[in-house]
Length: 327
Image 1: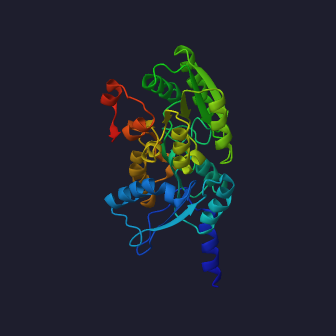
Image 2: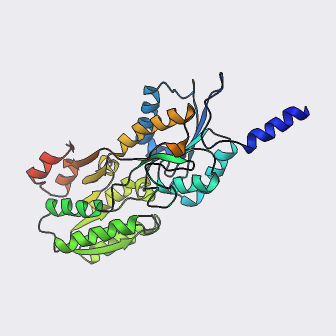
C-alpha cells in the first residue's frame, strides 16, 4: 500500500467523529437495529419505524441497509450483538430500550446511538441532559416519569372499585422500576389498597408469581414495564385471564395480545418519530447536538372481549376516556 494512502486511512480512523458524516455520493448508509425481544414480538414497532423511514425517503434494500439483531429477550446476548454491529462499522445504531441502549453505549462511544423507547438517559446518567445530550446518544425516551405507576393503579381501581388487594409484577433489574413501584405504593395507600409486590427476573418466575397472587387472593394486577415482559406479553396476558385477574399494562401491545387494559406512552409514535434522528445523523448532524425528546402521546386502550371473559363491566366513564376500545 502507498505510504500516503496508509497514513491517510489511519488518520481517518483516529478522527472518526461522533456523528456519521454526510454520506459520500454512491454510498448506501448502513444502520444497525439492536433489539431486546425477538423480531416477531418487535414487529409492530419495526413496521412503524420503517414507515417513518419511508416518509423521509429511506427505503431498506434501495438506499439504506439495516442490520437486524435481536436478543430474544435474553439480556446476556446484547453485548455480543452490540459488538457485532460495531464490527460491521454501521453508521448508527438504533437502541429501542434501556437494556439495548446500555449495551450499545458499552460497545461504542463513537458510533451514533438513537434510543427510542427506553428510560430517561439523563436520569440514568449516560447523557449530560435531554436538551443537549453530548456524546454519541440521542433520540427519544419512553419514560413518562415514575408517577405513571400511580396513575395506572388509579385506573385499575376505577375499573375494579371493590378491590382491596392488588398485585404488582416487576423486574427489579430493570432500571427505573423501583421509582415507578414507589409511586404505585403511594397511590395504593391513598386508595386504601394493599399492594403485593412480586418479582420476576426470568421466564420461569411467571408461574410462581401468579400462584402467589392466588394464595394472597389478589383482586387485580399491575405489570410494570420490562423488555422480558414485552417479549412474553401473550403469555402474561393469558396467565392474567386464566387467573381471573383484571390487569393493566404500560404497553398497548399487551392488550392486542388479550390483556385487559393499558395506559402509557404511545410507543408506536416514538418509533415513527425516530427516523427523523436517523435522517439528520446520516446527513451530518452530531447526535450530541440533537435534543432527546419525551413521548408526545399517551393512550388508554381497553379490550372489551377480555373484560367479558373476566365477567367484568368497564365503567362507561372509563370507556369514554379510552383512546381505543377493542371489541
